[in-house]
Image 1 (cartoon, rainbow, N blue to C red):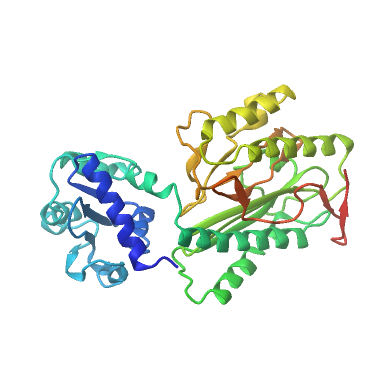
Image 2: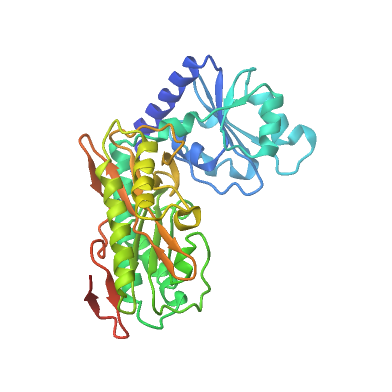
Length: 388
């Protein structure tokens, strides 16, 4: 659980950045940014929310009238600093634009979320604002409380992989595994009395071959797990903090070629893991893995498809970015993935992914699902066998 003092510390760090940039305020507009700064969860829909943090002084909220009492759960924020507009849309003098201009106390040169929707950003730009990734910078390094929250999400990610394995066999459907999502959600609710339905989610599915060669596709519910490499994917978010775990596995004995591809993916993963320590540029991790796979004949974009990893925190995808072109540098208490993929159109894909904490001297795996080093095979009786 994130306590009130930590939210205060985050806002103080943000105010320090504002003074360094000579900016008067920061306007947080995304649900993640607002949660990060005051712990208030909400579903914005079409009605925008604004948390306005001055470089000195007390923050203020501008929210829809119907959310006024709900947003009193914001941590370390005076209730008399919550200002409301009527609804969306609303008459001019009851609109969010009017209330923001009247109550925001904004002066030219203020900063706002880089991911702000364009319809809101246009108004903020007109008022003299400029977008800046300040919250993203603050979120890169996790506190001890955040790391414990991610550890909890990681445990449920491991459980999800186990569930997918337990319900995989030759001829099973994608739907059978996907249906087990409710089991993980039930575990989260039962085991965490403080669970927040607005910031808790589990998503899990097996991508059967050849769908596994398309990692961001959506496999058909009735697609069958037969020959070839399948990828079990589990994403969890528990009270706002996220983790993931993925494993390549089989429901028919892998061929010699499939065992070779599995071993190559595993070797690329180990190249990435070997570089995880403070001070290493994230771009170098991706570059080294790419060079290793290129040397083995896997360099075409359609064979690789994506970077080697990304960060975790309030989202399943956030900085630091382990990608060529990234300017991020690994530091202790960052949380990242290592997930080099090898994809063969019409055949399938090979990819493991783990949630990993960067420590003072290296790294610690936060997910521990089986099937890392040796291909697992589940036959029609869901018996586990080892090959390779």
